[in-house]
Length: 289
Image (cartoon, rainbow, N blue to C red; front, side, top):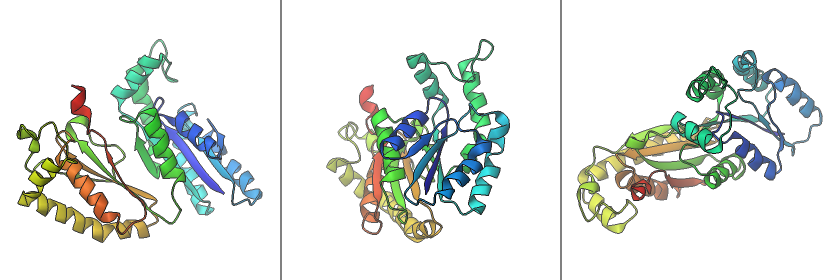
């Protein structure tokens, strides 16, 4: 049996994640009361079908008492040695407010006495026990529908259980640190191509920017330090049964230095790990202004 527990903030994409899993053969059950989780899993286990795949959606529609006992339910599943993972979808409050405004949907906690912003804050607090237990947190703030579907499919379906998926993600600190980052490296102290007029419109994937950065001794030193650190510790993460790890590299705008480092790290570690991806969260943001 393969079990995925899917939770997240309203408007973060939980329904989309469940639909993706349903499309690839999971039996999906949405809005299951947390207190019924062990009983459901026990019933499923009776059939002893290793090929069965289930995805269970749990969100703020549960009673708050149920949400508080989620860690206890997770401990029960672990003690029974049942294979499962918990996926939590998160998003920045400003993005959630925009999404609710665009769709004109009602937040499940909002009423005539509670504003949308207050509802989101209350939901974050109520779902904190689930978020703290999650095996994987995906920040959907900067993902469109297609990117979210691809990421869920890649992380849940598109890998073998014995492989640790590695994602190098570049970002700009002025747009916020990725919520799903496991490790964060700060490249803002490196020489900035932004101040070179001919390099400003380019990115860290362009040859002129690459040549500029590779001429800087501090860039070489930082890259080597990060590479040595990851070479030593990534195998330890993998040995600890980690199924994924997201390594974020940030600079000011997420266009040059972080992109260059993420690309170079991906190429290096792709030689020794089976599933190494690179994503540039903010690489095109400057083109929108």
